[in-house]
Length: 149
Image (cartoon, rainbow, N blue to C red; front, side):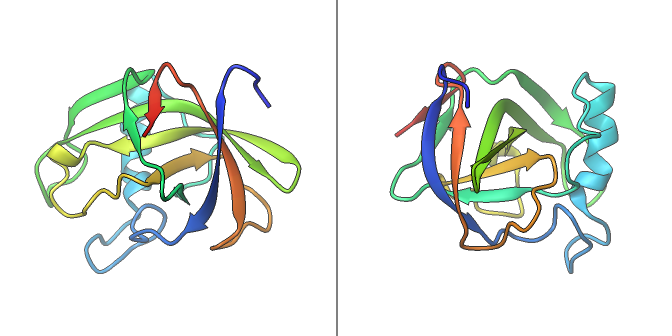
């Protein structure tokens, strides 16, 4: 675990279930469409699971300050207007192991279809064997990029 980061306890929560698989709203997984675009903009997520791990840190909340990457007005689907996405490196601690990843933040001001819960961090990380909803995790974040409220 990186000593310079802030470690926050959280629980794995169910999200909208559109990142990794087709849904009623999207006939494809959203990350499947977004990953090649993010790669063309300089962020390669090929080693990561094709979905998000939703980490609930309630009663705390978070706010992006200075993320490592921000991609403005990404036109990744014709189902709604372009969205802005930010990414900040993170680590996920689970059952004594640490996994590298990214906090994935679709900016709420450009995201029409879903409410962004300020206590829920979406994480894109390498596959984590055995992880399930309601499991406890620790999330390591960079305090220069994300603040915890």
